[in-house]
Length: 140
Image (tube, rainbow, N blue to C red):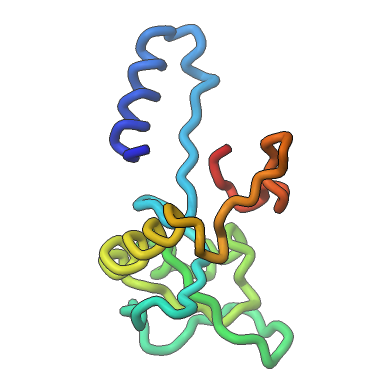
């Protein structure tokens, strides 16, 4: 479903029943514009980074590969303040540029997801539940 259509329908539903507006929420999943968090760059085009060197707030176990994050610009600038929200204070973090995420990562992720051959594709069991427990913030 188109994200704009989804947002419009949520807004219209909230306007139609103002007494229930507090119960309305919007979920943005990995691979959609507006998602912030850890991404797997895997075999995607080389990411364009905000900083050439990874940021590290606390030393964690050594030998782990760095992680790539798509975060709002203010979060990257003040990473010490925001790293806990992403559970990444003890990780070496590269921040990808917003345009790279939206123009390179999102279209390719969505194409893989639509065809069902990507590593994060849903695998529903007969009851309609995600086998992974739907713990990555994906919509049901």
